[in-house]
Length: 111
Length: 117
Image (tube, rainbow over all chains, first blue to last red; front, side, top):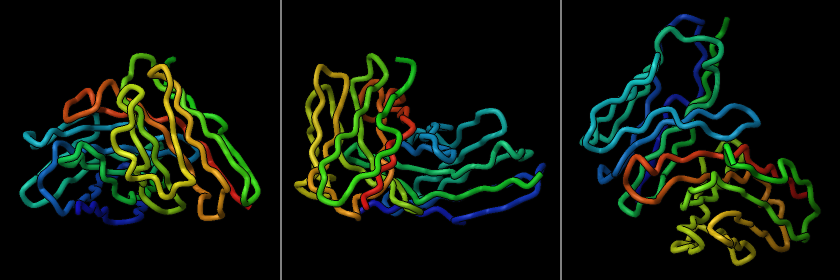
């Protein structure tokens, strides 16, 4: 059974720092991995999708990497800003095309 | 529409009552998903629709939960005889198609927060 774990559960850093969020999964048979952000009282917003054949994807200050063989992904946020404060969720699409979710990392960027 | 719309945004009900949650997906999106998110937990898959068909209902927590989708558009999630453990945020998402491709990127609604007293 696919399980997705995100570490840390919460992270607080000063504005301007670069940071890394971690996601690990137990079964390497995935189609893709996606990173989302969730703001309080709002739905989830898709940030990046990495296909299983890809190693990384970039969007602005965000860079997501995927190492399928070791079951790991990282989301790198450069030059963090207070507006980056949110909960970040990763999800893998398994062999049944279902998305399996981590519990998220709550990120706080202090001005 | 421009995004995924869910209603009501907030629902408080008494234990034992039935509730209906509505999801209006992005026009043209054939795949529609329902998830549940309890406080401090990850998303729990409930059900998905490909068109009006729900191939996988295994995520529904009990037979008190049902969902339907008509006209390949609006979907309704119904919870009968609500229990306190049903309290959660119910999220709906849609995507262009279902499968392993970039078209599977999900767009989420803002959710319906259900509180069962």
